[in-house]
Image (cartoon, rainbow, N blue to C red; front, side, top):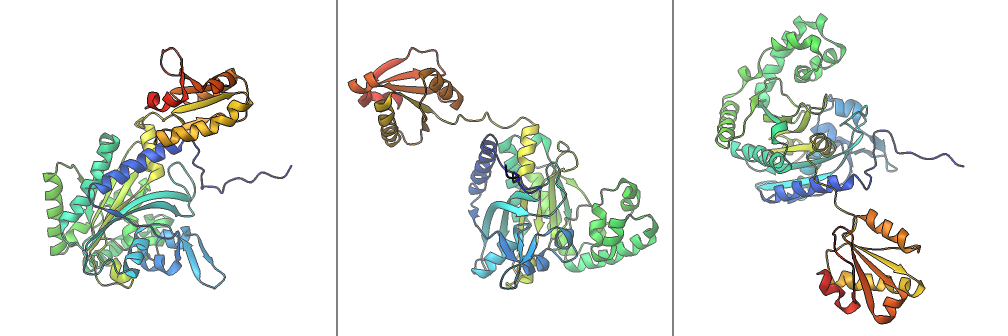
Length: 421
């Protein structure tokens, strides 16, 4: 026997018993973003590597260690997309969707990062994201956050997630803060761990995001980004807080919230939970006004967020908030005898024409009535239909109620659609 091939580590199958949960979550996401006027955009899974180096930043963990990058037969360096914002901006620039326009877009699909697989974090994972382009004011930041809050409300997750906010200010403000932070970290160089030392000069704001408890005291005393905010960013952040308060959305200011990607400015936010252990971020986003220009377009303000579907499904499962799984079929058609088996598929097709939306499963492979009823019950169908040689000769069929205490009845085939409707 040849060796069985298995899935790549960290790239998981979604089995039939799991897909209804995903379909439910995806349906809620689609309905919610549609209610705010967002339109779907789809882009390739593979992009030029340069797209992510220029957007995410060459000294980030994603670009340095996590991307799936390869050289194709033409000698081009290509990468499986590790996130969606850069792809969305590239597509918007390429097709003339962004300059001097307002766009509200959403997308979903698989992303890829070569990380150590663990609960809630995988090498192939699925993201849902949205981006709003062309609006510089804080009201669009507020709308994006309010939309995410509505998602939690629709899914029943509001009690289990909390909103954290921060502002990164302008590029100039961040540069001034960066210099002050590096100077401070240099004073504590001997106490920093290897990861923080590596980031100290290349991406010092990420040091603030360290999960090492030994550094908590040092980082707590570090300079505050809020003290370096430029006037425009401070006013923008104050207005955002006012709008969220007016909308009744509770939030916590987190001066250590910096996000892991280079392109963010001004508003950054995360929805976090304590229900998933170490993987506590459910949704994250912010403003990235310089990215469109950085990727070759005209300067365009933008804001958005992304959430991981695996982590969201896991949270819903943990909180027992997923609806009951639907049955595989609504109606299960059984046939007894060679002529009845020949007729069964045709009867099912006529029913599908008459009853659109009903899921009608035909028993295939023969077997006695007991076996077929057992399969019908396993399908979850509410109604079983039985057609035998004698019924077929008389143009009749037997209706058996599988989930109700009602007597079965035999009716004319011509009356069946009307009864089931």
